[in-house]
Length: 271
Image 1 (cartoon, rainbow, N blue to C red):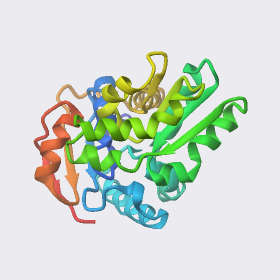
Image 2 (cartoon, helix red, strand yellow; image 1 turned 180 degrees about the vertical axis):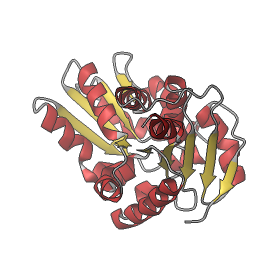
Image 3 (spheres, one colour; image 1 turned 180 degrees about the horizontal axis):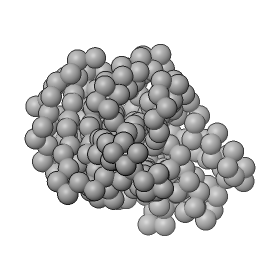
C-alpha cells in the first residue's frame, strides 16, 4: 500500500485552460504547493472559450482531459471559468479522479468578504450566460444580490499583450461603470485572465471595493484535499510541463508574464 500511495503522491497535477489565463492559477498553486509536479495544457488553437458554443467547449475539454489522464495525473484543475461553467459535469463523469474548478472557491471567498451583500461578477459571455455564479451565490446565501457583466473584449486584449494600454483602461471602465453606481463592494474576476489587469481595475473602482480571483482559494482547497488524503508530493525538485495546441512561441512570450516565471518546457499537442 505504501508503494501505491507513493506512486500517487509523485503523480503530477493536471491543469488546463483555453490559453494563458490558467497560468495565473498555476502561479498560486506553485506558491502554496511548491513540491508538486504539474502538467499544464493551454488550448491556444481554440481560444477564447468564452465566445464558443457550450458543445464546442465540452468537446475541447473532453479531449484535454483524456490527454491529461494519459499522463497519469492524480487530480485535474479546470483553470477556465467557461469550461468550469459548462463542462464540469461531463468531465466528472469521465474519471474518478478529484476534479477542481475555479468558480466555487472564488464564490466562497467573495461571500466571506462582502459587507453590503452586493457582489459583482465580470466574465466571458459563456460564464455569465451560464448563470453559474449568480445561482451558486443565491443557493448559499439568498440575501446576496448579484450584478453580472459580460466582458468579452478583455481576454483578447490580455492575450495580445495590450493590458497596459489606454484601450484596455477604456474597456475596463466601460464594463465596470454600472457596478460603480451600485452598492457592490466585492467584484469577482470570473475569468482567470483578469488577475493580469487587476492593478488597472483598481484604478477604476473604489478603494472600498474588493477584487476576488480564484487562484489562491483554489490552491488552498487543493492543498487541504491532498494533505487530508495523504497525497502530497515531497519532491524537492519538481518539474512543470507545458503543452499547447498551437502557437508555442507566443505562449512562451506572454505566458512567462502570466506565470511570473520563465516557461521553458513547451510541447505542441494537437487535439
